[in-house]
Image 1 (cartoon, rainbow over the protein chains, first blue to last red):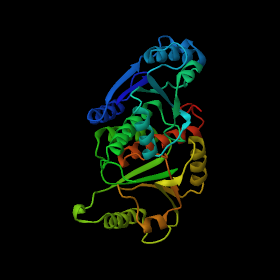
Image 2: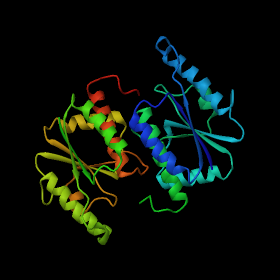
Image 3: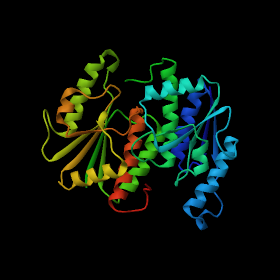
Image 4: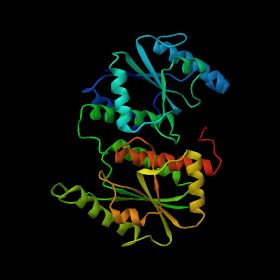
Length: 162
Length: 162
């Protein structure tokens, strides 16, 4: 399974980085995971929210390798509050099904203002981790733990208790 | 606002502790928060899941200060997957309402096997942070971030974006 996590902005908190590293190291046994951190925009303070979303969107699409529309050979999933909600088992099943296509899975965690229209247009689906809002930093950690949990569910290992 | 967070078991990961400390320090400006960590049971490996829940339950009730039924002067909320789900704004509103009773709010994060019947019986409500399962360690971090977010929402501060 080939998984790419694309995050907008660097990881600000050392505890988030430390936690992500822990799960990344555990995930080595289950999948080929790469993480991309798109650097913060220069001069963002002089830009409007929409301009920031637009410019960040261009950088996200570049990382995914598409200029408009859906990429071929990849499944793009945006972490978005309006996305689908799953139980851990349901999500693991979805992940296993998607991965069986042998396409690379790209998960994208956006910046503080969300995604541009072009990024939404390139996505195959939206995933919501909670009805509550968590900081984009914390979401990185949540995603990594949930990805690790999904892998242990797929492999039938005893990490997950229902 | 007087808030008590009761967790079963010590915090295993330094990144979780570091993150909790960060939000605890920010929360000092908003509420009187105390954290209690109930130590792991001795000889737990020779106990069944139900015996562990039972024994942990007795220690939780002792911390809450009640032997059976609902305590007076306190509002007890268990973090539980079967609990109510809120948006961050909805939960902040609920917290503000509950706190207006001037009762101490006790939030409880259980161990790996959940709560005993007696602990459920002492609870005023159940709160679920997500339809997904996260480790009991990660839930501590989620709760702290969400509590901080709720405080900034109640005070009308710009941390939370809808």
